[in-house]
Image (cartoon, rainbow, N blue to C red; front, side):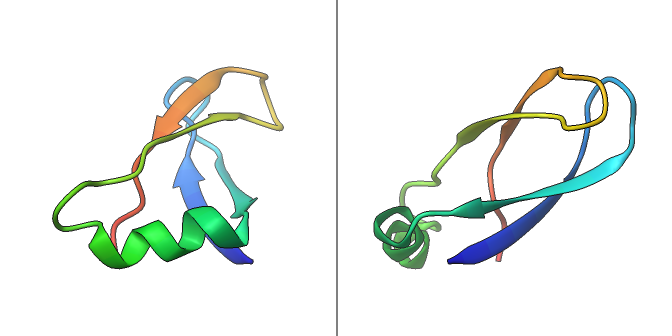
Length: 54
């Protein structure tokens, strides 16, 4: 599993989430087709769309 850090678009606090292994494999092709995750901020509950950059 890979931990991905992001800043919440609403409250601005840093949070992180773990990706599943299958999704992690897709990150090798991130330059060709980026993977976007919808994650909920643990601080304020806002849904963020996060596209991991390597």
